[in-house]
Amino acid sequence: MRDRMQEAIKRSKADYSEIRIEEKESTRIAYQGKDLENAGTVLDKGGIVRVLVRSKGWGVATFNNLDDLATRVDQAYQCAQVASSPEPIEMAEVEPVEKAITVKMKLDFRNVSLAEKKALAERQNDILRGYSDKIIDTFSLYVDSFSRVTFANSQGTFIEAERPSVALAAVAIARDGDNVQQAHKTDAAPAGFEYVLEKEELAKQAARRAVELLGAKRVMGGQYPVVLDPLLASVFIHEAFGHLSESDFVYENPKAREMMVLGRQFGKELLNVYDDGSIEGLRGTTLYDDEGTPGRRNDLIKDGILVGRLHSRETAAKMGERPTGNARAVNYRFAPIVRMTNTAIQNGDSSFADMIRDIELGIYACDAYGGETQLENFSFSSGYAYMIRHGQIAEMVKDVILAGNLFMTLANIDLIGNDFRWISGAGGCGKANQANLPIDCGAPHIRIQNVVIGGES
Image (cartoon, one colour):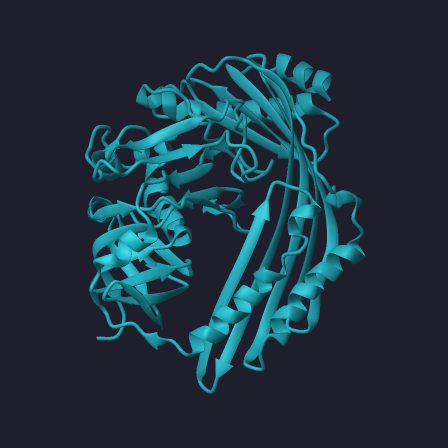
């Protein structure tokens, strides 16, 4: 394959050319209620050619037949010829590399029978359904995938990478009269089948939470000091801040450029945020992105100051900065765009007890159920929450919606916990019709003053 890819690239008439080929084997088993919804394995193979004619623009060709790569390169070139970029397109320099990235799984899920995988998903579902007679519906999911991605470009880079993934998800819906509540738990990793063994607690937690929420009161709307658990804090920093750090969005949006000025004060000195695609064992780790740029730690906020953003080679050239290893594509059907990898709030030095000790009336918000962002404004729903009364965790409450302005909220973070953890879910990040890109996000507990909470009035 290497010889065929490099020979096709040599024949390209473009200023820059690349080929990315992916072979993927995946298994999905899902239970809905008592019924097996589906169980099967899918094999997918295909590729994408992307070429650049600097004075014109990009041309792309995707394909499933790998026999005639030279023709695909020419098709992409013809597409580039009819492009009409308003200005010449440049790419920041990246040192060419040759690399083979292989993985070792303790228990390779490709060698595990479909029957055994089905039995695992069924056990999870049985736990959900049997937890309480108040559980009225369930969803149990097992997913694995193994991809081989081969990348070559006209500047001498050639990378072969293996990318495994395994995941579980459990959803429980509970009802008491007209009161219906839902809870979910997920877990995933770039690992083998061993990672999902003995995970019964995952389903138990989902079922327990759904039943507990039946007894929770609706929160009273107002302004509170709020402590976010690591899961909600990590989702917050990914969604509300991380996407604003993706420089294709910044470059193309005048208001975003005005907001995301390097050197701007974003928070107190205790606040540090970074994105790192080089950390072993995380779902967002790439080592090399889909342009062949090495992944690395990129500091975004340092001591409360905006110091960096995320780049592809093209956006780095446009903004006079260096590539960061964040050009990623969800699969071979798409060209890479600027995406996060593993995004996190750095660990602090406060204990959880310190965070709540002086709160007379506040909220401890946990888990993430959904939300939306519009530039600097955000709205997030927690999965569940507790009132904080006189420095103690009190009763559970529900329907806690956090809303506000990102910059004001970051400035109001006054304590950061010392209990950092990475959050690995079964889903992924979506952007520009590229959904479920593997990412991880992480955080310790954080405390935010003066948060507006939607709820009963």
